[in-house]
Length: 152
Image 1 (cartoon, rainbow, N blue to C red):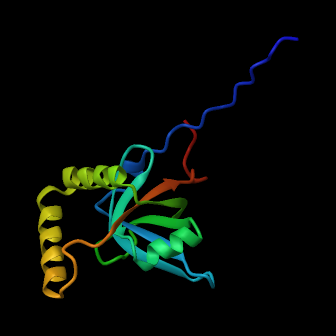
Image 2 (cartoon, one colour):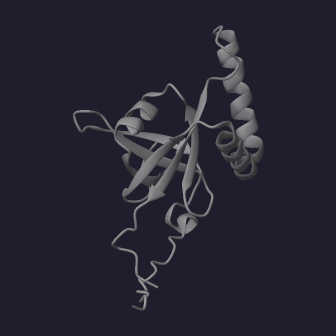
């Protein structure tokens, strides 16, 4: 009996840079009661996912671990949305190589701004008596294909 190969149509890749212009991404994660909590974060793209660094013990990490469904949209630094939210799935990365890779991508994308903000962050933690750097985590966000995008 011969084996038959069935070809499935390949969905074209989503152009994340075009879909999410700017430096800030609003990530809406959901509480147990279904209430959405939007948080603006710096982000970068690795071509297939959106990546952002955060504190391992933050509320958004707890919410994403419980429910990986999120909404993402381009936003301003104050969190005001610039585009309509799009459904996505988020994953929490904690392995050191993953965190170093995301940090490297952020350094490439934000250059001086990232270094200055991290310096102020570390100084603030030190003044409060905390460790110099919090335990880190990265959010790896996979965007679901929006229906409004035309097929290529």
